[in-house]
Image (cartoon, rainbow, N blue to C red; front, side, top):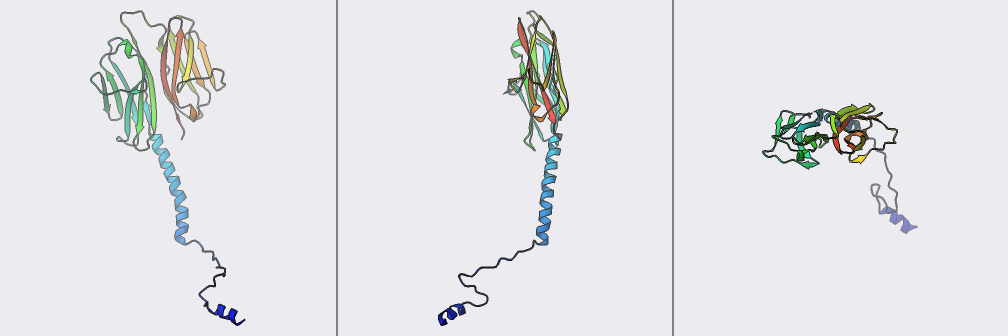
Length: 254
């Protein structure tokens, strides 16, 4: 008994024995901590709203457009874009998804937010899909606008088939309805193959309505979703050849 009492005496009121249980006290958050808890979600919400605002400002105002040209004609492809400010935008010109270098044959010009690709003279071999890749330096977002340029040789019969009206690039709000039309001249019968981001669209899908009327074709998307944003192509074919038209669909999600 004396030994046990001596062991207890080793520890004062402020020193705990080795086998003692340390009481845990609940500490109420301070006023500063309470303010931080309230401010942090608000900051996240404000940051998210600012990001959405920046993204909504970043867009094509005028898309590049497809066209038919004659051999030796000059070509000007232009688009107008919008960013958070004049220094936010960068635009890269592509041909068949390959960057077009600046040179005396392919000039790149920019005036405020209007960008131009100028070719002094084009030839049948220049027929291709051209794209404008728009980049935001602020948000790192990217958008594409695509078109087809088709060159007719002067010493040959008119192209068959040939576009009389190209499908046009558009911007829509999510949930809207999109319709793309084209008119063709040439020998019938013709067929139309619609492609999205390099893959054929399912003609049996109930998401689309496809209309074939000898020389007029259309693709209608009944309810546009965010996943529908991208690059589209329509390939028109007959027994004499085929032609391709490229265009873009952008979906506003704000």
